[in-house]
Image 1 (tube, rainbow, N blue to C red):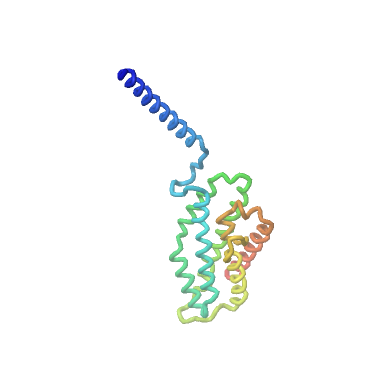
Image 2: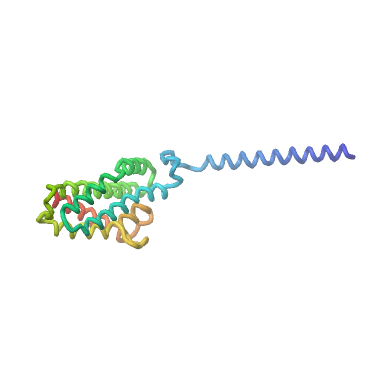
Length: 205
């Protein structure tokens, strides 16, 4: 009787081990069958994490423009420009752009490209502003067309971010492209923003 019970327990243990192995094999295969973007570095668990990191550059530019818009002298504006550019991680954002462009965005591929180009235009404007404010040490006067440039910069500041996660700003568009590309005011926002950036660059070159 005891021998029969022992054999029965052995069969139960063997069966449990076999079932466990089958379950582990199934789960492993299911995980491997999930489509993954091989271009996404391990540090980024999802596209959302990547977009969030990339959009932080827009936030940094927003803070810079707020300071710049409140500058009282040309030297002060130059100080803000030099400080921002020296502390800017340009290589990091260029790296993120290269990753994003390699990813599959389906029907939104062209618009994601456009979003990146808009961010690049914004960075170009920042570099041009540094040269615009590059003056002799004791020259505190703004250039003659500063009022026009200043008005455009204030408008751009409002277009790139706001206090609302629902508003169609560049920060929100860059953070959640697939959510904002389909919005009715997306096209108007992007066209107006790029137009304002182009106007500033034309004025300060």
